[in-house]
Amino acid sequence: MHYLRLPEQLQQQASNLINEARNLEFQGNYLAAIEKYKNVIEILTKLIELYPDYKLNQTYIEVIGKCQAKIKELQSYLNRQQFDDSFNPWIIQKPNVKWEDVIGLEEAKNSILDSIIYPSKRPELYPLGWPRNVLLFGPPGCGKTYFCAAIANELDAELFEVDAPSIFSKWLGESEKNVERLFNLARKMEQENKIVMIFIDEVDSIFGSHTTEVGGEARVKNQFLKEMEGLKNINMNRKIYIFAATNKPWLLEHGFLRRFHLRLYIPPPNLNERKRLFIKYSSPLNPSSDVDFEKLAELTENFSSSDIKEICIRLQNSLAREIIERGYNTANLRRPQMNDFLKIINNYKPSITPELIRKYEEWNRQYKSV
Image 1: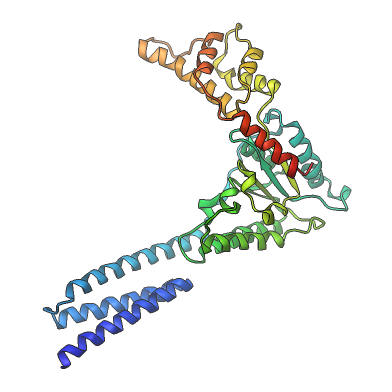
Image 2 (image 1 turned 135 degrees about the vertical axis):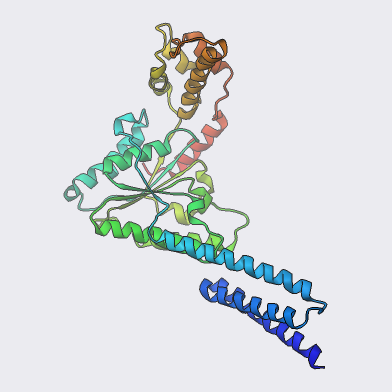
């Protein structure tokens, strides 16, 4: 009887320890969970040694393997967490983008100058305060990220770049801690008299309205809103700015949207802006004098800034291919002519459709702040 009872007792003890370990892991107490998993391994190893012919030994071996994998996983996380205390994944080196490098976007630029740049330089002229939260929306590839880099340089701000992968974690409660860590770091720099610009790219991936949502996503949203609520007073001499960018503004929840005092449409480049973009991006190729940039702009209606840059890159690649495949002993590209541009454009489809532009314009009419 004793032979039968002891294995069952040890098995029950191991089972209880596994449940305790899972609960501790759920609570975020990973060190204690690791100790429980180690205890499980000790008990099952002892059980196999005492009863080498027991019918469930193969199952115990499998459980031991799973516990060892769980210990390794938790330890790896703890090591990474310790490393993260001295390393922040959000702080980036500001791209060298000057205000004058941003082609077009005059309405948005004027709004940022009046509402953000000038007040930050002469705060005594703005006793009523000024906005600190800005939403940039519009079609992909039209310069939202580029624009934010220029703003960060104008403000001489520390730039934090945030997206969903840098926030969300598979570990329970860690995503909310990431948000808290982000804002704590921003406040710490603010106390050092530094201007901080938090740029949230593709913000709809965090604050979008979804038909299905797991608990972790809701907790992250609530934590973000809580942190933003603590920064909401525009009359304070606050040095933390939050910029968010999205290609899908209609997915954003109203609770998040109303916290942005400025909502600026970043549209596709107009005719004159497309001309200037062609001149800018093709200048390293030294185009021939027969290239009609006005004509190129007319042919690329609804093309984004990124589309125009991509056309120039494809042109460069075509010219380089001529040299490489024909074995020419020259390091220089020939000067591209008008026909070279036309050939690329005729085989390139714009990334923006008229229907999509109408959708942005309608949303802008409904929600724009200026």
